[in-house]
Length: 304
Image (cartoon, rainbow, N blue to C red; front, side, top):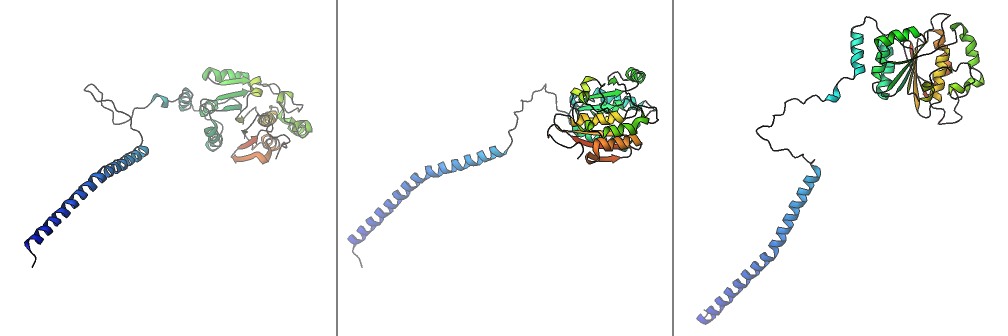
């Protein structure tokens, strides 16, 4: 059994150890708490930064007032969706006319798909008819030019639709000359790509408006001149010149369409001078050719 003095010393030693342990814990907590606080704040900041970087910035909404008009449940229609004048005129024209375009719906759809991709573009049309307003509307924002052989017909159409850009063109050929002109087209002068005005080929039409030669056309439609009887001008020079204009383009491709390919002239001349190798599609009586620029690659053959 220990004495009272020994017990007192032991008690003092135990109290001293407890006091030392308490001070050690206090000092340890005081030194680690700021660090944990700083670490926690950094983690929170990182999280907030990540959220800010992912979320789209939200526009500041003005404070609502008593005079503010409440927003409608449906969005207002912007003025930019207003129908363009050419489209509105076309709708009215065809809705009030019993005359329909000469091309069928399937035939029109072939060129309409191309215009949908290329418009607004430069669109040259050989012919002026009941479908002219439609072509202008499908090329809204672009330039659509019509070349017509009949001056009286131009005047009549312009009275009804004065917004169309059309020019009178004279042809000096006849359908009965087609076989002879085909032989001429096989000559070397007709295989040279140049401005039609300077071509030595008899098939090149040199009497078109100057803009026709100066503009790079994106789409060309050959649906004229008249060619259904022997004494008509026929489309021999129109088809050849369209192909020459396309080849002489500075760069890029030109989509060329020829209508009435069920007839001998349109069939033979489109295959010979627009080339079967450039043929992309035929629907009914219309053929679609895609002709590349020959100026971007010297030495390219007239037909592939």
